[in-house]
Length: 252
Image (cartoon, rainbow, N blue to C red):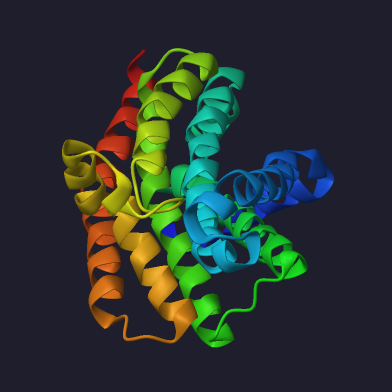
């Protein structure tokens, strides 16, 4: 069996864990509902004059925020699995070293799909109607892909830190400014100069731009290309570091 086939088999195992314990999806079901309703009420009138007018801006921004935030759990779960000895059992099997990691990360794609689906569903219930449904679906797939790429970074954090609590704290410390200092919730033109400069080059802003253009049916090739290139660079840099940190667990 090849490393790809082993990874897919272990991804199936991860999906079965979700099936047997649906509470693992609680955060990606509850958080999109809470944040979408909360942000619509808080920012809708101030940013767009009404909640309905704000929804096209909000839903596309929040679905990216939620998908990216869900990727933090990948690192936390990896640390838990390492501490519980699950990966020790994998190491005793004739598996490719990358297969347990890749399988775990691929299984978490289910979480990202649930997160963006719930966000869109809440938006539709509140009155959101995208000009291009195929474009919105493509945007959701792009958000899921970028979250998967970012999950390699948090998997690295999970492999090198000593506890799940430390992984959660360190990851959120980086992710919270990254997701809020972007164009996900408000136009960057309203931000102070230095913050606007950061927000304009923030990778989250690039992904949100791409999703909004796709959902609006506008030309999005440039924004999508930048997002895909950024995701590829993140995976190319983070995957080798994560595998290396995981392998070093053998020597501890």
